[in-house]
Length: 459
Image (cartoon, rainbow, N blue to C red; front, side, top):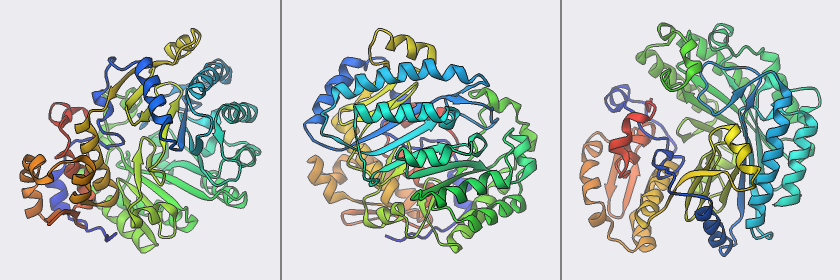
């Protein structure tokens, strides 16, 4: 496949709209209380028979500072003592989850997200990793993909060395923008040295992969200011970059109400920033993976895309397509072959459920054959920009052109606009279509019509 991207502002404007990011299919908008702990327990038992490796996600919801753009499930507090009662509940869930799992299943992927995981003390983080290691079959040879999200402002002198010592080999630093005015406007002020010093230290400690998160469309951003941010990032040369489009939804996310809408860049300037980002990162040796993600050409993520083994889950793009996901902590979403399940959305409900003790699952969705079929189609398009319809026919026992007759008809305008090519037994996303992949995937999403208004803008 080609990894080039062709930026066509007119097409992007024409197709601009809202839609899912497809970290799952069906999306979380389809979750309901009909799925409970009993369903999930059965799904894990069924997955044990496969012997597939595991991916673990742990959600730490606490933040010491509020970032006005943030839409994450979090608790902003300066009271560090609030973490321990939550951890006590989390340890109960870890042990309940592990009791369901065949002990021979190895954990190939581990991710701590939030919130701000480094809100915890060094001892608390050591304790959490110890409990995970006592409960699950973690790798001890540094061969897995063990990552953690980090706010550079929440690093103490011993934090990164400790994280490397307990087994993490990948880090993701939240940055968003280096410009001081933009930082002040979103209440996330961090110096260049805080960010770049942390990156240098991570390299010296032997972390295998370093990611930086940026965001475009923030208040007071301009083409020139974001260009300067990109220059600093390119000079630092992280292995991966996530460059997210800021979605201003103050009616849904209370912190965003502190952002002045008048300070946001207009649609044309946002498009210009996106075009510049793609151009500059491409020239600097970064491959556009898709959905806001970039990676150096030699990175495992880029290699997985070239070989067709890339996967997408709730943590974004991944090289571990063969793992079942167990997610622990408040609001965490697990993914088993049988379906998706989500934990309680508030810490109080979460902790109370685990005092029973029981798994704190409150909703989810069981997968039917149609969900699995459409999920695979969307997965292949969003990861590999291509779809071999014969492999789908073989795997699911269908005639592709007959099953998806309506969808193929809906794709015709996109064929005319050269976003996708439909040939014998293959769909190919073009260089123009890569930036509009969510539009293409939506065509295969049977739930999209009634839920469309609930999603963020695509660009």
